[in-house]
Image 1 (cartoon, rainbow, N blue to C red):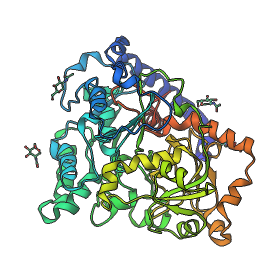
Image 2 (cartoon, helix red, strand yellow):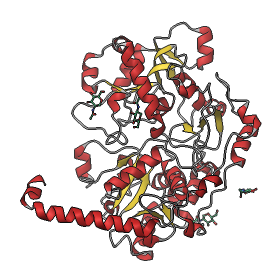
Image 3 (cartoon, rainbow, N blue to C red):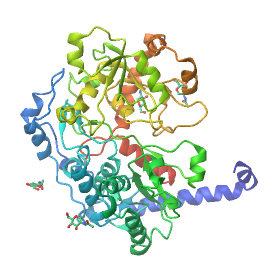
Image 4 (cartoon, rainbow, N blue to C red):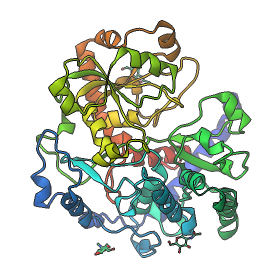
Length: 496
Ligand SMILES: *[C@@H]1O[C@H](CO)[C@@H](O)[C@H](O)[C@H]1NC(C)=O
Ligand SMILES: *[C@@H]1O[C@H](CO)[C@@H](O)[C@H](O)[C@H]1NC(C)=O
Ligand SMILES: *[C@@H]1O[C@H](CO)[C@@H](O)[C@H](O)[C@H]1NC(C)=O
Ligand SMILES: *[C@@H]1O[C@H](CO)[C@@H](O)[C@H](O)[C@H]1NC(C)=O
């Protein structure tokens, strides 16, 4: 590539100049008068007294507090999928995205389907897919029963409310396909033979190629993948499997397959997933002043647990077995633990898997995990069935420094690495060396100088907002969704 450029420097200069000129003209034509008045429409959550009295430090579980949840919800405008009213009042944005108005069988019906058959999904539309229950609320953070595979629903809602959205496909730079391929997969496993996923995929390609010209015109198209990439080419889910249409789409997903042999076998070589955070339980609340005692402000919040691993008892990876043996195992909540136990150096909090121990989930297991993380300095994030895990993002929002074990000879992608330097807020131990030497994890982490730990905590504090999805979805936020838009803009060279 560099060689070509050297050979034809004049051509390159002309191409670049033309590109800038055209981009500038497009911007000029599209943006029109800037309307920032929309801010006044934005809801101010927290006006309600019942909420502000709860802005106290310490542990205030809000499970079953329907009143509070109600108060939060009342202020949020209803989500509508098929509106076409605001066409004239598009807000200013660096580029425009058109969201296809797909028939409900491609999205809403799928989230309804998984909600009915699997108690672990709470994809309430009013909550923007972020979980139907508010488990805890601090002034700037809410914790919800967000499902780790809800990215498809969350991004759909975010883009519907985004200032990047255009109602006119002719104004669009990127087309968003709001199909829920991961949820379709779950739906299929539950409904078995009555659900024809292959047919649904065919109908999607038919819609894209026949209803509008843009897909055939090779305009940029983007779509979310709620499960890890590998599963989306499995026999069961298969939207990526040997599919000529799929390779025309820029997927936004929670994990890109890192094994190059797999990638080439499934003809995904040269195709990259835009890696996005798994949805965490924690959501930054936009449009709210920081509270003096907000725990999220303080990285040095009373953290008496030095090393924590929150993981189920299933040893899905060898490194987990090693760590399990080194840590003190408990199923107790943090509060019960501090009153009865004395060992705080290394704790393994055993989380129930969803589907098991429904009573624990009914009580808000999510919150117990968060509470452990909030009191820990380091949170171990060992690989499991795949190299990345959702818990990483929970520890980020709880400001517990994630400890990762990256393979030394392969490249596991984390979100937005072009813009974020992970060495500044995580600790990485090479996987192969760790497996070989089996060092004591607590001793190892104790060797890190305290100054450096504090620096990591401060950097984590700075970055955490950008690795979560802010709530509600109808207010602009400097969050993971904005990072996704920035990355899409960079991929399609839409931001000058
Ligand atoms: C949202 O919908 C509910 C019922 O579905 C209705 O009571 C409420 O007034 C609506 N809110 C807004 C802001 O339209
Ligand atoms: C989707 O859901 C709507 C409303 O529940 C229902 O009327 C429709 O038949 C469903 N469509 C399919 C294809 O299941
Ligand atoms: C990332 O941060 C680490 C630790 O501060 C530093 O050594 C490294 O040079 C940084 N990398 C980049 C690309 O800035
Ligand atoms: C926090 O992040 C912003 C935006 O990336 C950066 O400009 C700033 O330097 C960071 N501050 C610290 C203390 O790292």
